[in-house]
Length: 166
Image (cartoon, rainbow, N blue to C red; front, side, top):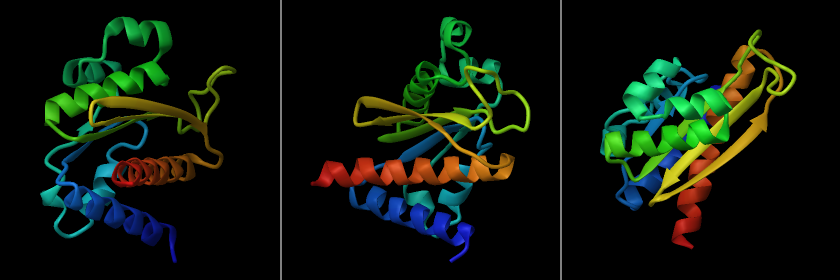
C-alpha cells in the first residue's frame, strides 16, 4: 500500500469511530497546513463528522481564531505543548467539536534550533473535556515530517476514541 493509501485508511477508521460515537472533529493545524483535514475529507461521508477546521500558521491567527494567549506564545513558543493544548481547546470551543486535533511543528528545512530542531512536532488532543499533548521528533525532509505528523495525529485520535469504548 502507498503512504497515501495508509493515511486514507487511518482517516476512514477515525471517521467510522466518530460516526459510531456521534462525535464531530475539528483540526487546528500549523505545520501540516490542513493536511489532516484534507485526509479526513477525502473519505466519502466525512460531512457527518467534520464541520470546520483551522489552519493557523501564524501566531496572530492562533490568537485570533483559537484564543491562544500571547503570553503562552512568548514564554513557550508556537511549537510547544502549552501552545497546542490552547490550540486544541480553542478549536474545540470554536467548532463545538467532541474531538479537536492540534499540531504545530518545525517541518524544515530551516527554522530549527538547538532546543527545537527540525522535525520537532507538538500535538494537542482535546477529547471529552480532557486535553492531552505529545511532543515527537520526526526525521526526513519537509514532506516526510508533515506526512508522519498527519499519520500520528490520526493514529492517536483513533487510540483515544478506541480507549473510550473499552
